[in-house]
Image (tube, rainbow, N blue to C red; front, top):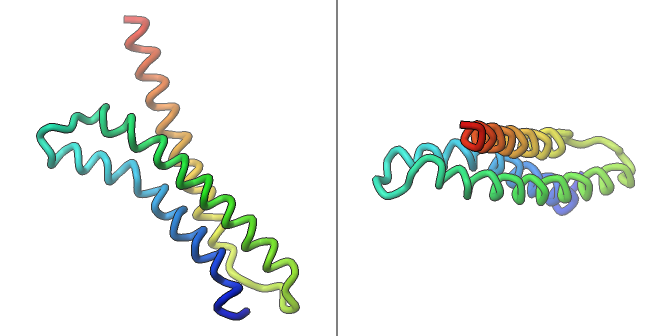
Amino acid sequence: MSSSKRGAARVAVFFGLLAVLAIPVAIALSQYLKGVKLLQSLYVAVPVAAGLALIALGASRRARFVRARSVYGEGSRWASRFAWAGVYAAVTGGVALAVYGGLRAAG
């Protein structure tokens, strides 16, 4: 597979990795920056992770489309794995915020 045909897969891996790292980076920044609280950072990081994961999923679908029409039909499946890992991180962060909101509302 030529380098130009691997572009969508590389984009998917890149954005998937960014989606996975968005929440831990936000938590680390909230620890080091005095003006940023943990919840504030999570309110921003979870939607950012979701957006990056959706971009990664779109690029992953494009990479799968290119791979399916290739003569060789081979290629890395890491693109979809990183994209779905980003989705998993965003959903997990969203569930955590929802549970926190539910507990705050109940108490």
